[in-house]
Length: 221
Image: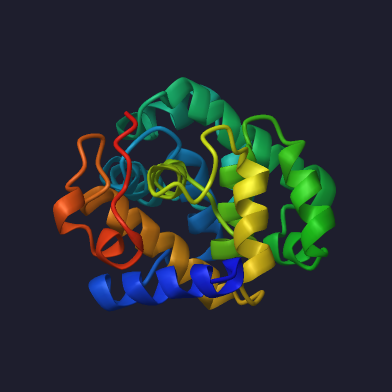
């Protein structure tokens, strides 16, 4: 079986096992951007608490987030953890957005995918996973998101070498799937669902729907 067929086969197995995931939680593109930055190294439950606090303070607005005192911002997002670091990252992003796109996400997302991704990666505190989450979920651009669950699932099933980089995993998906926003959205969410339920640090291999289709995983952590 070639890699294209394998990539789609895995997707179909996961979709059958878990059903549509309806990602990403967020009412607006701006809220999704904020969530993508806040979710680094924490659970979504904690991010939701931080976003609720920002909404209550009337700060889910690009210009207000740029202008708010960093101490106040840090206190509001405290539930998301690493709140001082993440407050600075939010400020970095919205200062950059103001300087380059007049604070307008629509203008930002009007840029081409490749060039915009390069720009986002230059913003301090925005790494590849955050950039791709912003592009895919907020910008509706076909940029596949790779996370720790993706790496764990594919390395355990020996579908990628242990030393595969983020960009190499991203290239695997984008080279073997149609450039479809909804497909990328759903695929990433399904891999997260698999990772949370079965492919845990101590995995439940015997129950894993993917293992039944492509063979058992290799416990590696």
